[in-house]
Structures are given as C-alpha cells and as structure tokens.
Length: 215
Ligand SMILES: [Zn+2]
Image (cartoon, rainbow, N blue to C red; front, top):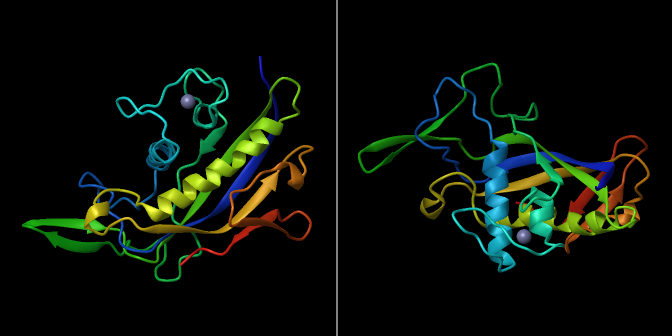
C-alpha cells in the first residue's frame, strides 16, 4: 500500500501558435476547451515513442515495477500520479472577450469547411502531480520522475495537439508555468527536465518554472 504524502500543482497557459483543429463534432456555439484526455493521450503516446516503450492498441502496458510512464498515468495497476484538468479559455486573452462569440477561424479543405481555434489564444492549464512514498523513500522516486511531465509538455510543443498536425494545425507552447507545492516537499527534491529551472517567487505565489524555449 503506497502512502500519498504530497501534491505538486503545475499551472500556466497553453498558447496556440498556429490554428488548432478540434474535429468536426465541435459545436460552434460551445466555447472551445482542451480536454484533459487529449493532452494525456498525446503525452503517453509521445513519451512512449521517445523512450522506446511499447504501445498496443493505443495503450501502454508493461511489467517493469519502476516504469515512469505507468507510474505517471496509472497504467499497469499503479496508482495514478498525474491528474490533468480540462483547459478552459484564459481570462488573459487580449484578442477577444470570453462572453462574446468566439472568433473561430474557417478554412476550406477540399470542399469541406472546417473551423479552427485561431493562433494566439490562451487556455489555462493545470497539472496535479501526486507524490507517494515508495519503500520509505519519502517520495524521492516520484520527485525524480516529475521531469518527465516537463519533457512530455516539450514533446507536445514539438509535435502538435488536436487533429490535422501534418496539415499545419496544432502547434502550441506552454508559458508562465508556476509550481505550487504542498506539505513538506523542498524545491531541491524536485527534478526538472534539462532547459528548465525553478525560480523563487515571493511568498505564497508559488515558484516559477523558467526556461529558454517558448515562442
Ligand atoms: Zn510501463
């Protein structure tokens, strides 16, 4: 039985760099949001490919006790570490107001008119990471695995989100990423991916995750 000892909350914005296509089923009257399953499935898929892990029928399973992918996403019977919230339109959008009609972009593909989220739209993202004790390690294993979340975000930036990536849709980037820690975790316990650093912010406002890459 694993003991849940802490949470790390990672918040920030997802920015559309190119237009993003959510599929034909999306009703035009409904404000767009990025579903957690869209981000989750993409992260699993890209991290599995990047680390040469097997995917069968779009699901990764394995017998490794310490597989970071199974630990992060609760696969193969592990406790789920990563919770991803649905991402709604941010109040930080400057190009339009949430209360008004959303400025969908329409594009003719063949004889088919598709609607896309235009570039420069911001969504609020939140990732909740749960830290469990493993063999009295005080959560060290999970803290070390935190870096894979950041790598997963980077892989999505390099790849695409939504549909039509090979036709130019779905380039995004993450910005203003801030860490909020709970309980007794120290910043020093948390491993971040290369290219990321943790910057101290003022008391109570979390710690900023800074990096060099973002368009
Ligand atoms: Zn695995």
